[in-house]
Structure formats: C-alpha cells, structure tokens
Amino acid sequence: MTGRHGSPRPHPRGFQRGRARSRILRQRHGRRTGRADRQIRAARGRRGAAVLDAGEERVGTVTGPRFATLAVRGSYDHEEAASNRGSLSEPAYLATAQHFDSAETMRATAAGEREGWVYARRGNPTVGHLEDTVAALEGYQVDAEVSAAVTTTGMAAITLATSSFLSTAVGAKPNIVASPACYGSTVMVFDKRYGDERGVSVRWVDDPLSLDAWERNVDEDTRFLFAESPSNPMVQLVDIPALAALAHRAQIPLIIDATLATPALMRPLALGADIVVHSLTKAAGASGRSMGGAVIARHDLRFRGQPTQMTADFAGYLRRGPMRDMGSVLSPFNAWTLLADIRELRARVDTMSTSALRVAEYLADRGDVAEVFYPGLPSHRTHHLAKRDMWLVDSGGPGRDAVNRFGFLLGFRPAGGVPAAHRVLDRLDLVWRANNLGQVKSTATIPAIGTHQQIAGDAPVPPDMIRLSVGLEHADDIIEDLAQALDQRS
Image (cartoon, rainbow, N blue to C red; front, side, top):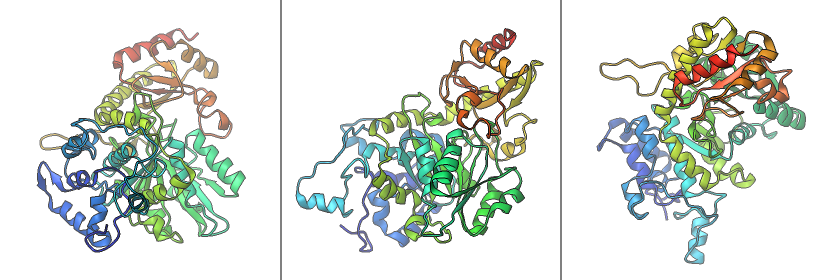
C-alpha cells in the first residue's frame, strides 16, 4: 500500500487510528483552521498524506481542541469507539502479538506496507494511544510537529533520550553539559553509567543560572545540554530560552526534564527546547498504580554530526530502533492506567499547585522553619523564571488573565538541623512517608536519606531538607498535619 505520492505507507503505531488523529489535527469544534490546514499540507508535501493517515507520527501541533479536551479525548474518537463495540474508553490490548490471516499479510505488516502492530515490542494500540495523548499535550500551542515515545520508567526515558547522542561514530571523546540540580538517579546515569563505564566526560555546571557557566563548558565534542526545570528536589528552574539559543548555536540539542511542571504548567518545546522527558509515574499517573516515562521531541531537528534518520523524527527513531532493539517498552496495562490518570491532569495540577503555594507560605511564616524552597515564593532564587514560564494552561481568555501556578513540590528545613528534620518526618500523620511525588496522596521524604542517598555527599541538597509533594487532600488538613509535626518536634 502506498501513500498519495507513491511512497510506501509507514508502519503504523496503532489500530484504526489515522482518521482519529487527522480529525484532532484538523478541526476546532467542527471547523478546520487555516493554520491547521497549512501544517497538514506541509506535512503531506514532505512525507506524503499516508504519514498522517496511517498514524505513524505522534503529531502534537494541535490548533483545535483545548488542552483539557485533548487530555480527555486523546486520539480515540466516536468512529474508533464504534469499531470497539461502543467502548467510551480506549481498550486495553493486553496481548503481546497480532494475529495475521495470511503469510502475505504478516510480511506486508512487518514491512510497514499495511496497518497493524505486529509485536508488542514494536508497538501496541493502547500504548500508541498514550503516545498520541502525551504528544498532543506537550506539543500544545507549539508551532512545530511533535512526536512522543513512551517507556517503562522516567529513567528509561532519560537514558534513551541521552544515550542516542553518545555514539563514538560522531566523535571519540563525547562530553555532556548538565545542571547538577538533578534527580539522584539521573546523576548516577551520567556519572557512573556514562562517565565511569563509557568514558563520557560529564561537565556539571557550577551555576545553572549563569549562561556564561554553561557556555564555558561547551565545545566541539559536546553532544547535548541537559537540565531539570523545575529540579527535584530543590525546585529550581533554568532559563530555557537562553539555553536553547546556546544549544542551537552549537548545533546540539537542549534536553529538559519537565516532570515537575507537567505540560499543564510549562511546555519547554514552546520555549525553545528540542527534547522533553517526563516520568509519567509522577503527576501524569497520579493514582500511583503504574510506572512510565516519555520522550517528546520536535521534528526536523538540525544537530551537527547526527544522521537525518534520527533527527527527522527523534521519538519515532527511538520507537523504530533503540526501544525495539533493547526492549524498554511500556506494558499495555500500564499505558491503559496512565491514560485514565492523565485525563484530569490540568485540573489536578491546578488544585495541587494552589494548595502547595498555601503550604509554602504557611511554612515560610513559621519561626521554627529555617528555609522554604518553592518557586512561587518571591524569596526563591528562580522565582523570576517561574513567574515568566509557569502558567496554568488555558487559564487566560476573554475577560480573564492567565494565572501562574508553581507546581506541587516544595522543600523545607525545620530549625534544628538533621535531628529535627527526622523528628518532623516521623511525626507526620496525614502525609505519607514515601519516595514518590506527584500523587493524589501527599508524600514526604528526606532526599539525603532517600531519593538522593547515593549522591548525598555531592548533590546540592541540604541534609536536613524535607521534600513535600502536595496532593489532593484539603490544604487546611495538610497544614494542620505539618503544624502538629513541627510543634512536637522537640
């Protein structure tokens, strides 16, 4: 089967999903927009109409439905529901392989000449629906084509997004430049897996807010810039537009881990980043039932020394190559539960962020709290960046102003040092002591003994800091729990 221009139809990522995606891209409440038309025509001119119709690409340039609608509907529509006995929700295809009615059908599907998904390591319809949705949300209001690949965990997403740029075929001595304000496991991957085991030079930037500090570390062997924004657990942001300009001058990608913001509050692709990674285990999967990760990237990237097959559609390249070959694919069941969770992402993050600001302001007013880390507080070092970049999506409109939201994660240091921090954590009653975040249940940990224990001596994380992820409990109840824990700390 060939496309309109005679090119082979690419291997699709789902089952009967091309038409659903075309409608998401082309309509706004039943009307096609001029911008959407232009984007579709441009895509057809480059790759043929079959690309959009067959469902290979996770295109996130959606000019029609708003963010919350995209999260609820994704790429599953009435027509596809009719082919699934009217099911309102995407079916969970809990199968490892597809049956074929003939040898020729098997051959043609495996070759990408007809629709089908072949084998779960190469794709699954339920997983594909999650990829569609993630791409649509992260690519919302981004003037570019965007694709997504979902993975087993957030760390799998980071590893896949970064390791692909470390090929020695490009140069024998690769280096990477990164902010040290990173999740503990990210530091371990860069320092141990890449640095110690592969000989990659890892250049940690002394001051992530200094563009000069970043620029001093970049040379002809640098493969990418990497930062978390906001970071875990210090909730510090970086200047994404400035870093993107630096990366593009050097013809290398800027990769941003935006797990703590979620696309409901910030979309780094719109700020100039090339690749975004998420742990879907966190706020996207707030029920806490499944792990997952995502890599979302622009199309038609221009990086020095990198092959076109990788940069034309980076997420698609990951699915077709590294993920297929190395097997870091998400299970259909986990994709199904994450699809259920992500539908309410905007409203959930709005509520959690509103409560987190109240909690942070309460803690900042207490005399027995030495320091509070939250980008919504004017005292936070990156408050100016948060005010500029973190907005509740679609909160503005006729007669109303857009509103800042600063996320659900904060940190605080009880007066009295490490012993006091341990006592406060032990006395929490409503808040759960756990090393996860972004859940509907509020959780707290001490990163120095939990999430960052392996790098506690090197990480810029105070040993007496409690990390608090604010959930969906009433803010007054969370504050009362913190109050009793702090009041009884001695």
